[in-house]
Amino acid sequence: MSDKATLEIDGKKYEFPLIVGTEKEVAIDISSLRSTTDSVITLDPGYKNTGSCQSAITFLDGEQGILRYRGYSIEELAEKADFLEVAFLLIFGELPTKEQLEKFHADIKAQSVVDEDIRKIVDAFPKSAHPMGVIASLTSALTAFNPSSVNVDSEEDMYKAIVKILGKFPVLVAWTFRKKNGLPLDYGDKNLGYVENILKMMFKQPNEEYKMNPIVLNALDKLLILHADHEQNCSTSTVRIAGSSHVGLFASLSTGISALWGPLHGGANQAVLEMLEGINADGGDTDKYMAKAKDREDPFRLMGFGHRVYKNFDPRAKIIKKAADEVLNDLGVEDKILEIAKALEQEALKDPYFVDRKLYPNVDFYSGIIYRAMGIPTDMFTVMFALGRLPGWIAQWREMRLNKEPIGRPRQIYIGETLRSFKSIDKR
Ligand code: CMC
Image (cartoon, rainbow, N blue to C red):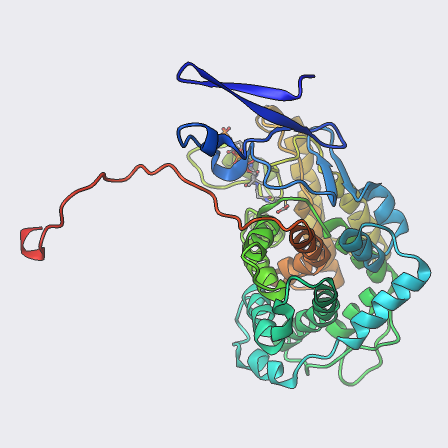
């Protein structure tokens, strides 16, 4: 293949280098386009054809349904690794040795106490507040409590900010959950593993000893790994673009959490369960809802189906579907909602509307069913997604800082009024 692309504008030819990735993906490097042409730019709403960076973190092939973190397949990581190992891998590029992992965990644990004044902020939220709004605000508040996280030019300071947020974020998640449930805001146990401690912090009752359920622990570990990174999605791009202004890690993360909340992104896991519950309450008639999803006049969409990048089965959905079956079996839960989900999936996989548009179940289609079985309320689902995505956002933010990427600042094509004269108010 040639190493250049040629563009002809108004009879004049311009050459641009081709960039080829390690997995043979090809991009036209148009960074000199505007300066070498007569201020011409590209236009790509939704960035369907635009690469925003070169990244060595996650490889995703949507046509073939492949997802790899730092070269390791998601299937192998979900089976053999634990979440903290995956977090280290994503952030620092290699699987940790035993010593590296122990040090990483010890550094995180040393930072897992939250300023008592944050408790007052948690207390000030109404119980009815959406947990995503609460967690985004609390992450933002951490910026004010930890101004040192703003020094983005020192690797050492970046490391400190990274272990701080990995230590404090699960506490904030647990407090968000506990406040909603009227439980005392407490800490976990330094002697436990990272994910084990999250479960204890969330579920420990004040008057009884907490007993860890290994099935639930294993399922949560898996879910967090599956959500840990997904290259340049909406929230990650938001984190990178916010961080490109040299704002600190916590402020960048809080923008990502807000972006994740939307129902077309991480908020889909809540939307899926609400949809399945709605179908159940309406008599469980899946055909009716399939017809609604296909009707272009009807705004209803089959939540948990379709993906901007995957035009094949989302590999995470395959793993989660199996995990959902196992967890429900092991916990002895019979869930009508799971039956409805399976029926919808079966119908969609053979329906020409979904087949032609390559709409397959995505990661969120089954994750909510597992969270529900674990006793996590629906409006906490997206918070659990954020907990899993945290290492990915951190890794992407760190990579962006280490690559010294310029501030993200897209251009536009202006289509408004041309110059006109001001009319005084009595003449309008
Ligand atoms: N139900 C019914 N029709 C759909 C759906 C759906 N879930 N998703 C896409 N379509 C149709 C859409 O109407 C369009 O049809 P037509 O060509 O006739 O106009 C076609 O498929 C292409 O859709 P699109 O909206 O142009 O595709 P997109 O790449 O812009 O959107 C998406 C991707 C994920 C936003 C979309 O598929 C969707 O809204 N899905 C439901 C929400 C959801 O599950 N989101 C979670 C994504 S995975 C978690 C994450 O990583 O955030």
